[in-house]
Image 1 (cartoon, rainbow, N blue to C red):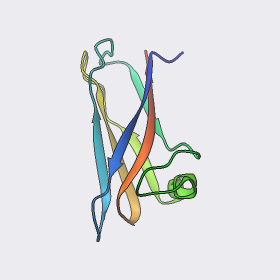
Image 2: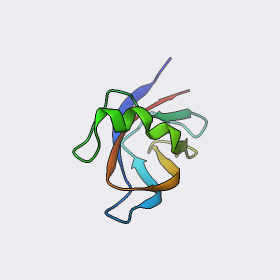
Image 3: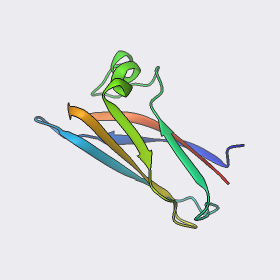
Length: 97
């Protein structure tokens, strides 16, 4: 069962963009060093930079990986793409013990 959920914004930057982006998830007072964290793209999300359709298919190019949680603080979501991406994408996250 999820202990916390939320959304965050990954920004790959302006043109020419980047193949990597990360975002720190903080303010998670109940998270422990042994908690499990996961991040994902949701098909119907959008940002000012990218449409619902872009979010639906970005998973074909980019992979999301969560770093080891820091107790009482949070964790970092790392993205790595096979191609350079530009602008911001919304990601959703969840962590549980």
